[in-house]
Image (cartoon, rainbow, N blue to C red; front, top):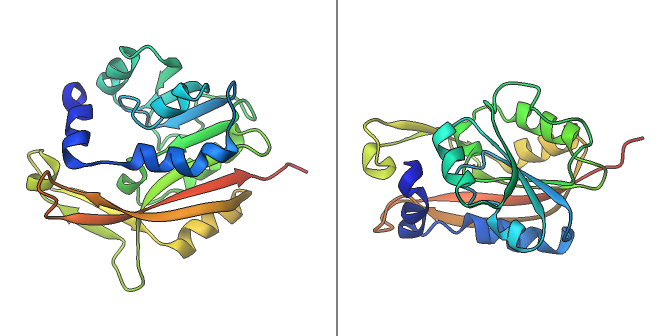
Length: 206
């Protein structure tokens, strides 16, 4: 998947990177740092790099990191399981964080929020995308091989506004913006899921 991830994202019409960058652009500045959580091949942070930010990234896949490293824009890349705390960065060491195309694989988002809150400096921006969960919808849902181009079913998770706002409050984030958008699951756009992008600011520590 790593070798053709970017081309498949374009074929499927994945616009998450443009959406999160557009939502957060007003709150970040050239020369700042941004941590891409689950950086993959770097799609989520490449626009931040073009805007003059220094990109740091972590991912559990060595092959994805190799593909990202080949683009030569990330300042530092680390292989790390996102479910394992602590993340390999010092407290209050980075300015901003981005996470997209990742959180839909996690039933429990608390480790991610705890670690981002610890790592970001005061007033840092956290922009992230979750599968949007409406009232009455189940949190977990299964997508088949026809939508994942794998050999098996994959379980994904939706996270509603109440849950997500609770996580932000518990971890000292203030919501700045959010936007719902569709995510095509196949080239023909026959299956679409709803996602929501959030932009939050790390509160000042007392």
